[in-house]
Image (tube, rainbow, N blue to C red; front, side, top):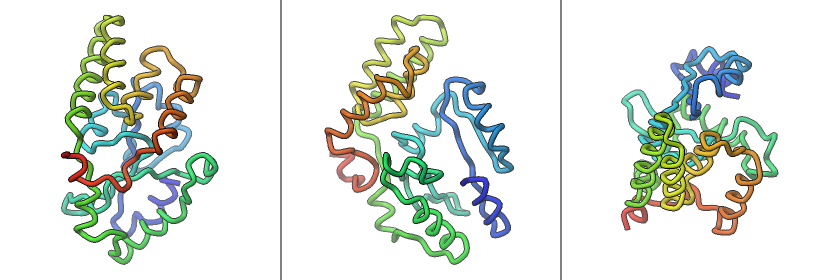
Length: 206
């Protein structure tokens, strides 16, 4: 989807940047090489993008205009309807809104709505990112037991952050599509599927 959209809209000055959050470049390389993107396709092993933009799951999209302003904050966006029964989202809606923005300058949200949807991390979410970063560095240094404690603590502090909870699974030797993931998913569903939409800056600060 992303490569097709890039090819379709590139002459209008539009650029797509895809970022994989993986523990190593080799984890994402096969998928990137198979897709053969001609747009910038990056691999973020340090989860810098997730922290900078308060991303709590993938796939997530952020729209940024020519002045570097966020004009559509974090929202879950899937590349196809292959798993629509799972995520219940119509990918055509997002693609058509993207075309309208690039070609006509029409945005789905007003400035006030954008500001209301911008995600600010809570105190616990900031601590979770710190715990995750510490755990990652301990893992790289070979201190697996200490890393495990901090990975677990990060998940406890931010239970709805899949980039923290699921993102740590491959590092810890856990199948990110296995039993532990489905336990995580069922827990997330039981708590009302908390996600980006509808959570305001005010709620994040309270």
